[in-house]
Image (cartoon, rainbow over all chains, first blue to last red; front, side):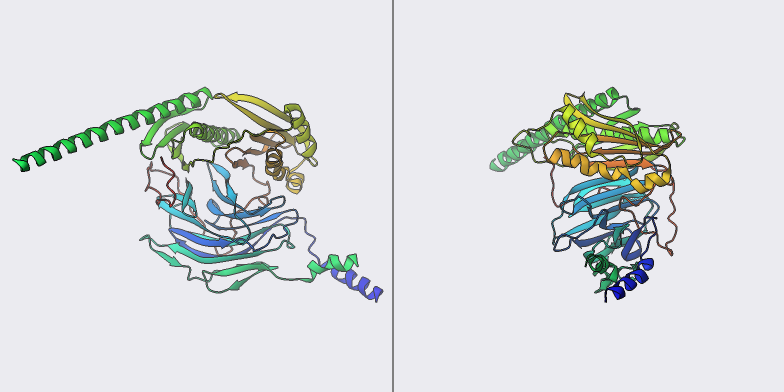
Length: 212
Length: 287
């Protein structure tokens, strides 16, 4: 029995991804294109394990320059943290932490174009800041992002993801531009409401086998 | 006769209301101008390339700060802009700390020729005043030792690690300065020492060991090339940085690179703002 376990381990160890190149995993939806977007993002009902890295769950303009708002939870954090992030060619990178979002709670995150290239970020309708980023309309992403480690847990509910049209009216996302990167996946209720989560894989249980 | 008296009273009331409105308006205008002047003085003292500080709007009070930097992009210019924008942010927040007055501030950055390089607006909110002054358990030297022992530079050579106490506008600021030299980009991208800064500074403040307000981290390559210029301001809080091409982006949130994504066209700004006023917020913190 013991030799079978050892053989099994010898067989499966080479299949574990060993690349040292760090990368992020993304899972969520995208809307093309809009003058603003908002989404209600929940934190998981219980603390999750992010090992030495972390995750963020947000609504954002796409690359190369962006405004983004959501919550992030990194190694060493006690609670998920609300934030607004900007990246523009002159101001470069900025993150404005906005306090904690407790486990099992929902907050509305919003980005809106207010004219020309200027986009503003709001958390629960409270204005945080504005930057000149890119002319509207633009694509919008509502996603979970997991840094570097596919063992990091994920369980984030996105609800009522909406876009703003050129006449300032709000509509629920109605496009299915899904992004899904193994081992992270989605439970889709609609294009605007979905759950991002981590698929159970044998890699999670390997350390337990090795310990026994 | 009574009709005439009523009309007279109404007229007088309207005149009194109008005069009161004009007086209040003038007082607000004077106060706003005074704040703008004070901010301009503070920024000039810091040696910023200041063009102007003007009152964009009186109620709620919005100040607009215009700075000028060289046209040609370079690491030096990026570093100067990073420091300049932080100085504006810090001074605006400081002006608000004693008595909440500024609702938001705009930073305009121009090049040598006066062309607009960037525009931004940041909103300020009243923070809860701390009733009891915090007592810290360490002194400056002990805190510096603690930080040095706790921070892990990995494979980098530590060129500078100093906790410095400075006085700015009658406020004492404790800033941690770190300069690291990494042997190569791959080592930097494996170690990512910048990931330690936020938890380190948060920890020392939240455990009430010592008040550390800011941390400047510079990471250089072996030939003194700047790879990262990073600021964490605990008092605000904000993290801002610029980094050279090739430095990992896997330590902060960023959008997904989608294969079918249409390239985003970045057009240079030509117009000056003001733009449409942002949507009204649910909480109106203005006095």
